Image (cartoon, rainbow, N blue to C red):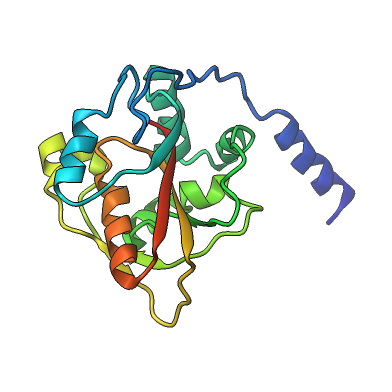
Length: 200
């Protein structure tokens, strides 16, 4: 690398805008999915439990207007450098758990050019266990349609499954995407799975 190339790289890093003031999720929140302003288990988690799923999720921030604007720039405008804004705010993850970033479908990856979850986990050890088929974008679906969507995940071939997994996604809305992944991995034999998202 030439000196001038190194200088330009450092200049880009130094001028990364990070004046975001995300709103942390504080008490009270649902003890299972971190839905804000819930003193007890929320109706969403009760519905999941009735379908045989016990939610075990943690989230950091409210999915408010500032967070929506951030993800618009990061995901939909493709500002890859913003991954560092998230990476700087990541907590210490539970010991003994393998990190698994939720994958994109091949079309979404080609369109965006990167997996937004893998990008902010850069530098951390992650495992890739599932493939995702093409589905309508979650942002284009109603809540009812999201909950009714078919499972798009399938297990990769010739992989070794860990005993403990922490599934990582960017935003938790209905929880359908994460729970599809959980169901696929539980069926494959993973005994202990938690989930995590940046926003809720």
